[in-house]
Length: 333
Image 1 (cartoon, rainbow, N blue to C red):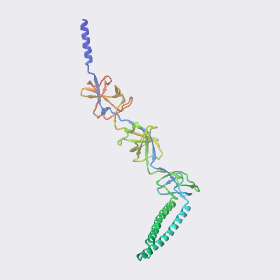
Image 2: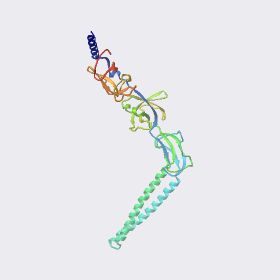
Image 3: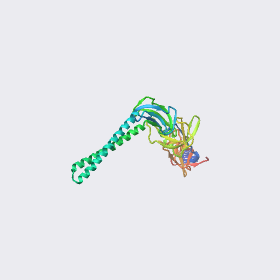
Image 4: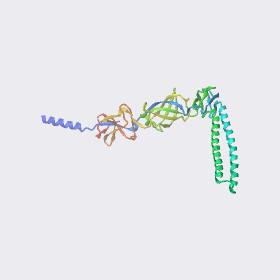
């Protein structure tokens, strides 16, 4: 009798060991979710410039004060050009005197050439006069360049807006003596702007060109389209800067809010992930077996992105006790 009981128990244990687990399944297309992310963002001007003096002069007039709107090419400040104009007139006079010397030297050269035909002048004397003319002509070229620089310096006394914008701050005061490089005013471009977002480095891969993105601020939203994302990671904050354009309306420059975007890749809900060995993943149904599919990007408690096809069959119920390669029986979903 004892042997019979032992044999029966062994048979029962073998039957239990050979029992095929029943699992429930579903397709990835039905299970997958789309994740949304947020990052701080601000509407910024594409140009925010400090306009500086390029010449040494006194501020004569201010035509656009702080907060004023200006058009591209509009006069915003004038420097006193008196000293620069005097320097320019001096160069014009020097150039006129040089022109007269060139005419005289050329006439002497012509006479020397005529005399050389009858051998009334030596070759050295002829060469000397040719050299005189060449030197004077070179000097004229130099003075022409100097005169052009002087004219440009006079023109630089008229400070023009390089683009349409708003004067953010005025530094130059009437009567102030300024030198090259001294700031005169800061100008923010208003007809060129974009959205600058600070995206955590580990989320940069979710910023795809086909991703739907919006900018929200003060309870309002505006659609945005991607322009570019910096390949550099700012080490201190572990962020990458992404820039977006506003295809339609936009809030004022300086508005702060959030960039919200949806990852177009499929993600498997966190509760469906299981750990086997040192990897997180899911069990997929292949034929009559459950195969463990590790997911490289998976983290505990977070949905995991995957590139598996939508028709992939995922084991949902009964996955906890499975091992890779186990034969399974599919029950009712």
